[in-house]
Image (cartoon, rainbow, N blue to C red; front, top):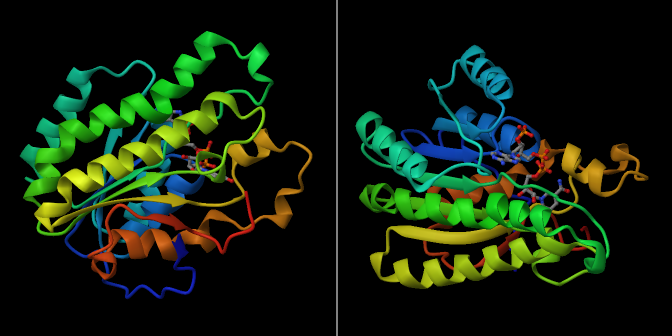
Length: 254
Ligand SMILES: NC(=O)c1ccc[n+]([C@@H]2O[C@H](COP(=O)([O-])OP(=O)(O)OC[C@H]3O[C@@H](n4cnc5c(N)ncnc54)[C@H](OP(=O)(O)O)[C@@H]3O)[C@@H](O)[C@H]2O)c1
C-alpha cells in the first residue's frame, strides 16, 4: 500500500480527459470533481441529489473550467438499462471515458451483526458494490477506447481489515477490493487501462460525522487535503500501476 500525499499535480494534469465521479454532490466526491475540473478534465457529475450536483456544476463553470455534465442516478434503484443508457450518452457526447472514480457510498448502520437489518444490508451492498460493478461493466468499452484510462474504487480501512459492528459497509468494501483485483488482472494485458483502490482515511465529511458522532470534525483533514493521491491516480503519472491498494493519507487514520 502506498500514499502520494506529497504529489504536486501540474495545472494541466488532466487536460482533455473525460472523468466520471460518482457521489459528486457532496463530501470527497464533490471536492474530487472540482479538483479534476481545475486540472483540466471534463467531469461527469453523477449522484442522487440533483440540487447538489447543480451546485457543483455551477462552481466548476464559475471557475472557468471545462463544462461538466450532470447525471442524476440513484444506485439504490438503478437498473442495467440505466448504466447502458449512461454509456450510450457518454459514447455520443465524448466517444470514450478516461477516468472513473467510484466514490458514492452508504454507511448503513454501525451495529452488532445480530441486530443488522437484512433490508439495510441489501441496500448498502447495492449502493456500495453491486451498482458500481454493473456500471463498470457498461462503461468498460468506453474505458477501452481511451489511450490512458484509470478506474479508482474507493475503499476504507474497514475494507482491508474487518472491524466489529461495521457490518455491510465493511463487507461491501472488502468486496470492492476483491473486484478491483479481479478486474485489474483481466485488463492487465491491455496496457492502457489501470484499476486500483484508494482508502481516503478519516476525512471531514457527513459520512464520517455519522460514523463518529462524538468526534470533533475540526481534528480531521478536509477532503481538499487528501486530493494529491486522487489526482496522481487519475493522471498519467500513475501509468503502470494496476491492481494496487493506495491510501490518500499516511497510515494511522480510519
Ligand atoms: N469520510 C471518511 O472518513 C471516509 C473514510 C473511509 C472511506 N470513505 C469513503 O469515501 C467515499 C466518500 O465518502 P464521504 O465521506 O465523502 O461520504 P458523504 O459525504 O456521505 O458523500 C457520499 C456521496 O455519495 C452519494 N450517494 C450516497 N448514496 C448514493 C446512492 N444511492 N446513489 C448515488 N449516490 C449516492 C451521496 O449523495 P447525496 O449527496 O445525495 O447524499 C454523496 O454525494 C465513500 O466511498 C466512503 O465509503 C470515507
